Every structure is written in C-alpha cells, then in structure tokens.
Amino acid sequence: MLDRFLVAAEASHLPAIICANKIDLIPFEQAQALFGLYADIGYEVLYTSAKTGAGVAELRQRLTGKLSVLAGPSGVGKSSLLNAIQPELGRYSKEVSRATTKGRHATVVPELLRLDAGGYVADTPGLRSMALWDVEPEELDAYYPDIRPFVADCEFSDCTHRHEPGCAVRTAVARGQIHPARYDSYLRLREEMEAEARKVLLRA
Ligand SMILES: Nc1nc2c(ncn2[C@@H]2O[C@H](COP(=O)(O)OP(=O)(O)OP(=O)(O)O)[C@@H](O)[C@H]2O)c(=O)[nH]1
Ligand SMILES: [Mg+2]
Ligand SMILES: [Zn+2]
Image 1: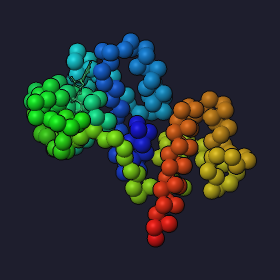
Image 2: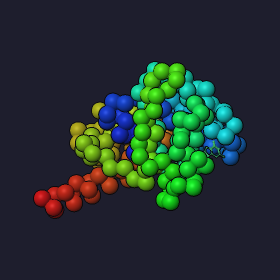
Image 3: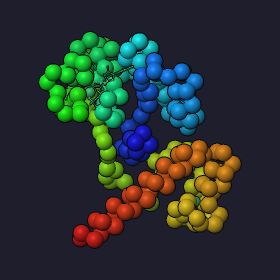
Image 4: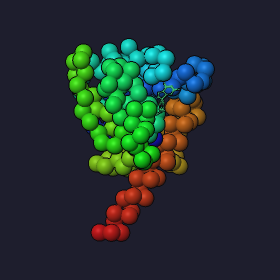
C-alpha cells in the first residue's frame, strides 16, 4: 500500500513524506526496522504519535505554507494527527465522531482544511485500495527511485526485470543495492497492472 502511494506520488511529480504514526505502540528500533529502508532510498520519514505528540511539531512544520494531502489506510490516525497539529482540525477522528459514525471509516469525505500557520491540508477517508491510473506497466520501474538508476544498464531496453539475462536490476538486488521487499513490491504491482491491462483489452 505504501509503495503504491509512493508510485502515485512519483508519477504525479508530488513530493512524498512518509509518516509512521502510533510509534508509542512499539519500540523505536522496531519502527525504524520497518521504515528505515525508505529513508535509505531518500524519502523523508517522520515518526509520530498523535497520542504523545512525538514528531507532531516536525509534521506541522513540513505542512506549513504547502498544499498537502494526508493519505493512508483507515485507522492509522490521519485525523488524530491533524487534531494534534491544530486542535479541532481533525474533526472526524474516531473519538470525536464515534456516536455518529456507523461505518468503518471515521472520515467520510475528503476535506480541505486551512492551517493557522499557513497552507492547506486535505484529510481523506482511509483507502482500502488504490488504482494507479495513467501509469503504464512498462514505466513502473521509473517510479521506484531505488530501482530507476539501474534500468539503463539492463541488457534489453524493454527489460521487465523478472527473468531476462543481463538484468542490472536483479544484479543490484543480489548485491543488496535494492531492498528485496521493494523489488518484490515492484514485481507484484507490475503483475497487477498487467492483469488490469489485460482485463481492459478483453472488455474492449
Ligand atoms: N496509540 C495511538 N493511537 C492513535 C494514535 N493516533 C491515532 N490513534 C487512534 O487510532 C484510531 C483511529 O484514528 P483516526 O484519527 O480516526 O484514524 P484515520 O486515519 O483518520 O481513520 P479514517 O478517517 O477512517 O481514515 C483512534 O482510536 C485514535 O485514537 C497514536 O499516535 N497512538
Ligand atoms: Mg480520519
Ligand atoms: Zn532488468
């Protein structure tokens, strides 16, 4: 899911910040073991807790003066984080709206909110899945900043990085220059996109 969001952001030329919330629930080393690889790739990773306030000032600072959107699965604490940044901003977090919320989601409609410190931020309902429109399977590798630098060295210009001989991406995985989890997510996403494209062809 995270890699999917990152691909969508790369494809739209939107700078992405990864916010790992609820760090009060696990030891910090454990959080770092999960998200540290993204920092290695070059993404900015913020570790936050809406509950203790950890990292909230940093998040507020990164949103100030910008037009941003908080996206992620339901229940991760997007609205709670906004509440922590500026009271009453996350009006639709679970606590506040428990009495009126029947469904799984606390936030029901995306809403653009004004920050006192300047800028706007959109709170969104949690996403269970996300389609990647306007991204062709053949260009997926370009949206993985950790895979992208190796693609030009593949023997075949249309290399899918699955099984072709002389694949520089697979060599990089073997050498530990690309994290295996990221390579796996590339393969899965590519598979899914190709299956989707086949369905569209069948319908046509
Ligand atoms: N322990 C802990 N709980 C948190 C934290 N942030 C949010 N929660 C809890 O997580 C639950 C979901 O929080 P929400 O802010 O409603 O989550 P959301 O991402 O806005 O969810 P949707 O609106 O459905 O997409 C609530 O019970 C919050 O109290 C945190 O940093 N630590
Ligand atoms: Mg919400
Ligand atoms: Zn290749």
